[in-house]
Structures are given as structure tokens and as C-alpha cells.
Figure (cartoon, rainbow, N blue to C red):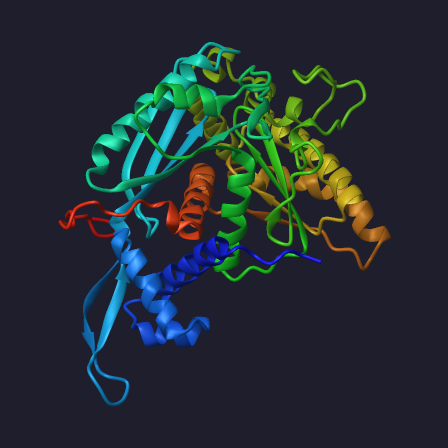
Length: 414
């Protein structure tokens, strides 16, 4: 039998319930909140007073009375009261987006980190610097959460193994916190592919797509990342590494991979492998990967045979990996994200060639391949969503004002 929730837990949950209702339906009155949430009117009044003291809601005029009596006092969320900071670490950049409670971007910065392969120290220092600059811009807003997305498995809050960065087990949270001694807010590290998968899943849903219970997401930048979604939620597995499609072996005697195996999907699908197979000079794919992608795109659209052959081979490798994942997980859909979505026209023939046997042999089994719509911004979109949801879930983490003077805060998107 489950133990009853402590009163403090109930209060925190009710604060979140009231705040979420005002965010979704405001401006609205206390009576409307009570009717919609099932809370007693007195409880709603107490919750609203608490949220107002934290600067999260305020009255915004009066509405017509619902019946007899005084006009209703309408409430809205003060979006500018709390900022969350989303950070994405790539092999060469720190990408930062600060957003308010509406999800609107209020500060942005993309900075090269210049870290040598295998050294997380410069990355942590650059994250600290970019977050500190965001804090300076926040003014009277409270910094609610910093979420850092990395291209590697996250196990028990630590980066377990970021092969593309050359990191072994790394406590990135502690390294970043040491750079921000005056920033008093939680810092969380997450996997970048998981965040991108959630963002693409919901973006496609918003466009009218329906998804099967189990979905695999695959993306490719400097390396290949993946995620397994079950019921729209990230499935982490036993060690936080579920969905790491990039290290599914697709050839027994294929090229060596940094993970220690051979013939992994990563050795066929990552950017450097594609540019090499397409005959693009190595220098273009090293210090300037954006230039390498642009050149590969140019050659593909110009009908360059070697570039198209490279994508066809990669498509066969990706199809083999998806077939393996579908066989083990019974996934019904794959979402191609990042640059894979752009390259889908050249990847799909190889993918279909690998899947056609299974589709023919088992007629009732369907495995769809969809393309993402968010491009390179998918990871940050997912991190922003997760950060905002955590603040809405824990409004008690926002401090009370200690002064009677309410600071002027920017509205959403201002």
C-alpha cells in the first residue's frame, strides 16, 4: 500500500496545478480555477496568494461577474518572473537559449568552446561564462534552472561516455557549478538526442501526425545519436543508454569505431564518414563541419554520383540498424532528425531496400519512417520544453519577494 502524500507534497502539487491552469487558461478568475481543478475556493485563494508573493501571478483587471456580486478579478502568469537556461554542447560550440515561462526566447548566444578532444574543462568554463552573461541580462527575473544537453549517455546525473567529445565519466554538473558560485539554481545534464526526440515527436504531433507506442529517433551531426520513445516518453534502459543507434553494428568487418567495436552505424553515417566517402577533402570536415555539410548538400543537389553513392551506402547501413532496433523493440516508427531529415531523399532508397523483406514477410507489421521538422534547433527546443515544465511543476522553488516593491519584469517575448 502506498503511503499517503505529506501535506507539503500536496501543497507543492496544488501550487503547480493552479499555476498551470492560469498559464493555460488565463486571464481567469479564482472561481474558474476552483471549478476546473476541483480544489476548494479557499484553497485556490491561498494558492494564488502564495504564487503572487513569489511574483508568478498577478491580477490583471476585472471581468464581467458570472452572476450576482462583484466583477471577477482576473489572474495571469507573469512570464518574465522566471528564466530557464538551455545549453547545448556540440563538438565545437556552446549554444545557449534563455527563455521565460511562456517559452519565449529572451537571450541567445552561440560561442565556440575551442576545447581539445577529451578535455571537458574548457567546455565547463565556457558554459559558465555564457550562463553568467545570461544571468546579467535577467535583471529582476529569477533563474529557475540550467539544463545542459550533451552528445553522450547521462548516467546518474553524470556524462557516462561522450565518445564524440572523447570524455569518459564526467561530472559536468559539478564542473559547471564551480564556475558559477553566485548562481543558486539547479543545474541538470541531459542527453541531446533524447531532447531532440521529444521535441520532434511533439512537433510532428502538432502537425497532425499520430505515432505508434514505440518510436526510435535517429540524428546525425559529428556523430550519430538516437533515442527510444515509449508512449511518448524517453526510455532510458538499464544504464541510460537505450536508443544509442549510432553504435548498432551493421557490418561484422566494417570500419573501426571509437567505441571499440567495428562496423557501427556511426562509421557510415556520421558527417566525417559521409564527406570522406563523397570525396570531400578532409580539411573541410575537420575544423569547419558546417562547410563540409554545405558542400555535401551542394554536391547531392547537383547530382554528383559519388556524393549520392555515399548517401545510398549510408541509407543501407541505417536501414540495417533500424531493422535491428525494430526487431528487438517492436518499434513502429523511426523519426530522422538533424541533417538526416534533409538527406532523406537520398537515404530512403537504401533504408527501404533493407526493410522491404520484413515488410513483405510480416504483412500486418508496419514500420514508418518520418522526417523531423525542427532541424538543428531540435535539441534546444527539447531542452527549453523540459526546463519550462520543471519550473511549472515546482513553483515553490521560486523565492518569495522580500520587498513590498514589485520589480518591473518583461512580458513574454519582450
